[in-house]
Image (cartoon, rainbow, N blue to C red; front, side, top):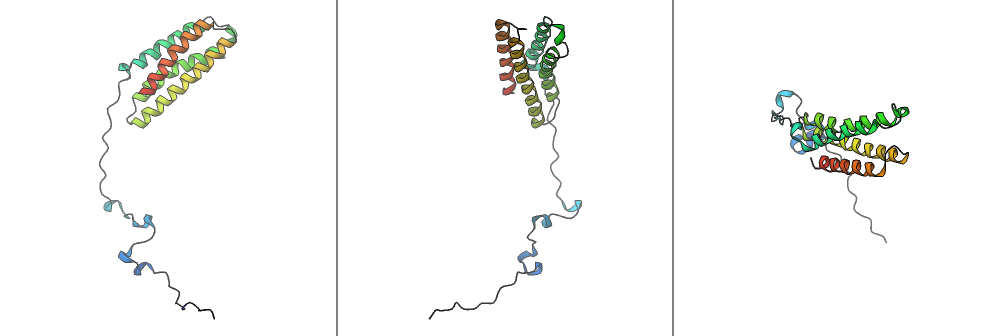
Length: 159
């Protein structure tokens, strides 16, 4: 005594011609096929280049790189191609990336170079700590360098 549901015919999927407005279900098919049919996008006006020479953090990073070169002069010569080279390259990388990023036309490109500069600053912080741990830097010198480096990191983050 079960009631059977009424039998209905299975519905066929509508063909392309039977769909409303003859639209394809695939959005890619709705794009214009030729360049002539696309509306002209608004031309992007390039942003003016930033002047890195006016950035305080750039000048501070240049001065800091100079201090790093002077500081590493007292390191043993066996570190010439090791820690000395890494410290100097990381220190130079900070203002270099700020300057190079300033030449980029988009804010995203500028931000990418600032991220690289900040990465170099953290790399430098690590290397200074190692130099202290193995006796190449005294605690007072390390603290002064890290304070200056932290200031550079914060300023770069704010750009």
